[in-house]
Amino acid sequence: MGPIRIFVSSVQREFAVERKALAEYIRTDALLGRFFEVFIFEEMPAKSRSASQVYLEEVKQSDVYIALMGADYGYEDAEGISPTEREFDLATELYKDRLIFIKRMDKNQRNAKEVGFIKKAEQCVVRKSFGDYEELRSAVYASLVRYLEEKEYLRLLPFDATLHPTASFADIDEDKVGVFVERARKKRAFPLLNDAGVERVLRSLNLIDRGRITNAALLLFGKEPQKYFPASEVKCVQFYTNTISKPLASYQVFHGSLFEMIDNAVSFVMSHIDARVGERDKSAEVDINFELPVKSVIESIVNAICHRDYTSNGSVQVMLFPNRLEVWNPGRLPFGITAAQLSLPHTSIPANPVLANPLYLAGYIERLGTGTSDMVDECKAMGLKAPEFIQDSNFRVILWRENAPSSIENALSSIENAPSSIENAPTPTIKLDRKQKKVLDYCAVYARTSSEIFNHLGIVNQSRSRERYITRLILAGLLRPTKPKSNDPDQKYIATAGGGNE
Image (cartoon, rainbow, N blue to C red; front, side):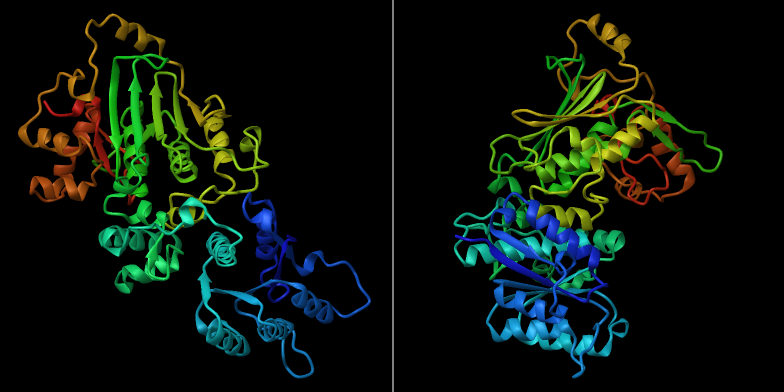
């Protein structure tokens, strides 16, 4: 069986970067690269025939025609028709499989002929919209995987794109979808509103096909994802020593959607590492400088949850030692990528692209392909040892903490009957009033916003209240913010090991 030929067409200048990136992605992806061969005009050798003739000949030889449509209509021939529209018409005439991807923009930004061309294409093919390259890549991936399934090249789809055999829309949490839409609109200008409806949102994210939902939809927005995927949990543990040994300082297992597990795992780490409190010279709140770069902690946890092998019975493990943070996941690096390359900018080949795109839209992933090299820069900027990336039976990321606290280990080794869980951990000697205790109980398991805290207390969110019920608890080491900046719009607070129930 020969390769499946893809012809990628578009206006020559408008999508030059995207065309090259797509071709590189398809060729290097472990799955798509096995089946597809890509043609883009930038790689066409010089020939005596006109470019338009060569393109039409390539369309005839192709199996799949991909068109990227945006603002420009492009060069027009003597009859006022662009080469792109000529190619689309020929692909239609020859019954080629056509995949149309349209850049989202205001209609008045498009050339009038481009608007007409898009309308014509929409009448005869299903099209997808995209905002940037990350969305485009996810949509192309999902479309090509569906093509392989329909043509029976694939008998088993990749895990994230597979339609779940029994789950239905009743298993999707509408509130979780609403939270995602709100966050994605804020972070990436996601085009849909909360009232768009669950089905429309899932369709825009390639999480639904013919009325059935994918595994990715359940992991991202399911009411009970672990009902279907028990191993899709995150285990977080804090050790007293630099080895995996009991007793444990703290241990929690987080369930829920990928978004919820990421938030809770990050909160667990940030609430158990050292932080330096800034001066209160501008407001009652204070800035917190954590001993590990917050973005690197988030990146290591997001990568583990997003890129893990979900067919494995293993789980993601977040392990905090006195001298380091280790994040494990049951997965392997993409073919062609080595652990050494992760310290440098490299091609991004997400193991679960359908899962990765919503995480990108919601702001959990900043820019695919640079996250691990950014971690190296962030740690070095703080004077820390460079992170380590290790591939063996699992994939591991190690973030080294500042000045491995041997003094802490010595102190702990002298404690008889050391506590084995967060509930039994020693608490600082500070006199708490009833409402302060109520705050710590409320924030013991899940990180909460200041609004949630004051609603729980039934009091007004004022500077005096924030001083008493948030800042004082932070200064006492009983409450920790999850973000380094006090004015971060996503700021939440969680009780530390010493701030749980009494």
